[in-house]
Structures are given as structure tokens and as C-alpha cells.
Image 1 (cartoon, rainbow over the protein chains, first blue to last red):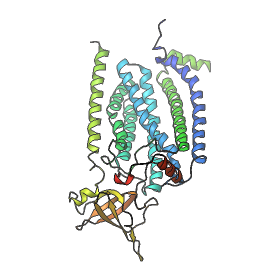
Image 2 (image 1 turned 135 degrees about the horizontal axis):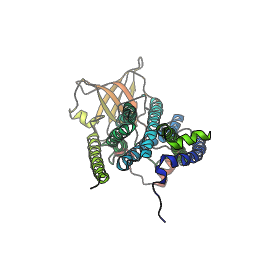
Image 3 (image 1 turned 90 degrees about the vertical axis):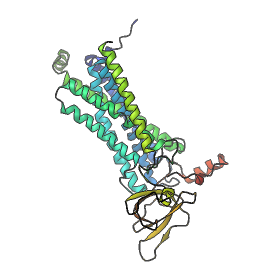
Image 4 (image 1 turned 180 degrees about the vertical axis):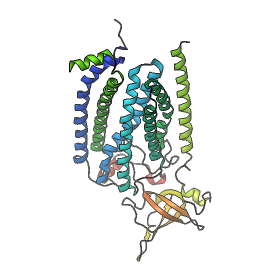
Length: 246
Length: 153
């Protein structure tokens, strides 16, 4: 038996599949996010060794920051796949991912500003972590802007895919801006990330909200992809049949 | 080569270039001067005077002195290896600012190597634990390495 790997790379067969997956991811997203936030707000210590209640912004902050970085890699993956195989659907995925990625980046910067104001004493500082995260936001916005500036969808897809690929250079820089082997070698205001020195309940809450955000991203990206499919394939016969069914 | 194979080769070359540039940016950022100076560098005279710079270090124990009549205060930033820079400040310190905690100071260096701060920021550590649990862990993992010997900004 041969598996047809490309079955769901056709928008016509992917559209109904995505429609079935969206509610599953949405329910998981709501349950995990609310569960994680509940655990984070009510089952964790009120005061840490140096920080007070406000550290609880971490649950939204880490989840959105992880998604921001991760979605960029996902977006480049789909863009490169599109460049290689010329598949329409992968470009549509890349477009749909960019918007959610940009929102997550903005959310991480926003929550970070609140946390920074209460703990460090400033909303913003040109520290390596924050600066590179801001560049990531500009990359997402640049991708979206370039794509919408070119009228021909296929040319827009290819041009913005190359831009996304070049921008990939920033992702390891963001990661290493606070995680380099010698902490004295990369000074920043942002604390380094430490997954082993975290109180267990805080850790559980972080992981649950991260999973919840992840599911949310799946759901909204699929929803946006479905919209893009309808938009781009509006002249095809299968979309016309879809309309007729209504 | 088919057109698709050519595209794959180009993309792989492109990704290699991207990886290379990423490594170089990271290396450049680790030269440490990208963000702040250490007290050691300040004392060695490698830092320009009267220019807006950042200095980071630990706030020395017992060094915080406040004026009785105004907001003026001063403290000493140290790297626990004997390099110390005095900082003066006339605004409100952030909540997390404490002796023996890291701080990042933005300001200008005067000719006496005293830092006239315009902004003092407190760093917090990456240990998300209540104080009691921290003590328990310290006992369990004794003898723990002395944390203060190695300074992280």
C-alpha cells in the first residue's frame, strides 16, 4: 500500500479536515489555558525569595514568548516547503502563522513591560533580550507587509518566503541572548531562563499554559488558513459547490 | 539537476548563510560591551567619562547610604573580586533593589570614577521559589557552591 503524502496538501481536501480539527484544538486550548492560569494564580506561593505577587505574569509571558519564537520557525518551515514543492497550501499556512506569531510577540513584549516596570523599575530597556524580541516583531510585520504589498499572490508568497528565511537568523540570537554558557559573557537585564530552579507548582502552571497557548495557536492558524483558502480559491468549482450547499 | 533539486540546493546554501550570520551576531553580543560595563572595566579606565553608559554589578553589603534631608543616596557596585564603583542617585529606587542583589545603573561617569546615575534598575534572579523552599533545597544539596563568589549580572 502506498500512502498518498500529498492528499491533504490540496486545499480542497484540507479544508474539511481543518474544519473538523479546529473545535478539538479550541476546547483543549480553553481547558489548558484556564486550568494553567487557575493553578498559577491560586496554587502557587504568593511571595518568592525576591519577587512578590507580580511574578505571576510569568504564566502569560513565558507562554507568549515561547510561541513567538516557535511560530517563526514554523512559518519559515512552511515557507521553505512552499519554495521547494510549490505547494499553495504551505504558503497559505505561512501567511496564517505570521499573524498569530506577531500577536504572540506583541503580547510577550507587553506583558514583559508590566513585569519589568514592577520588578526592574522600567517598562523598557535596550537589553539584548528585549531588543532582539522587538526585531522579531518587526520581522513578522515585515513579512505581512511585504506579502500584502505585492498583488500577485504567487509572487508575494515567494518574495516573503525568502524574507522569512533570512529573518530566521534572529531566532538563535534571541535564544542565546540570555542562555549563553558563561553568564558573565552576555550581560543583560533580563534574567536567564532556568527550568530547574522553579517551584513545582509554578512549573506545572507554566507548562499547562504553554500547552494551552500552543493549542490556541493551532486552532486560530487553522481557522485563518481556511479563510485564506476560501479567498484564494474562490473561483474554483469546489468552493462554488460549498456555496451551493448552504 | 531538476529545477526542484536546484531550489533545494539554493535553499540549503541560504540557510547555511543565515546560520553563519546568526552565529556571528551571537558572538558579537557576547563581547559584553553590547549592553553594559563591569566594574572592572570602569576601574581600568576603559570607559569614557561624561557619556551615558551602563554599569552592572552586585550592590555591596552595607554600602547603601541615604541622605537625611533629600532623596540623594549612594551605593557601591562590586563584582566580589575587589572591583568597586560608587554610584550616586537622587530618585526612587525600584522595589527589588537590595544589597547583595544585582543592579544595572545607567548614567555618566565623572572624573573621580563616580557614577552619576540617571536610572537604577534592579535585576531579579531566575529562581522562582519561596524563601523557605530555597533554604530546604540548600540544605539538601549541601555543600552548595558559594553563590557569591561568581557574580552574574
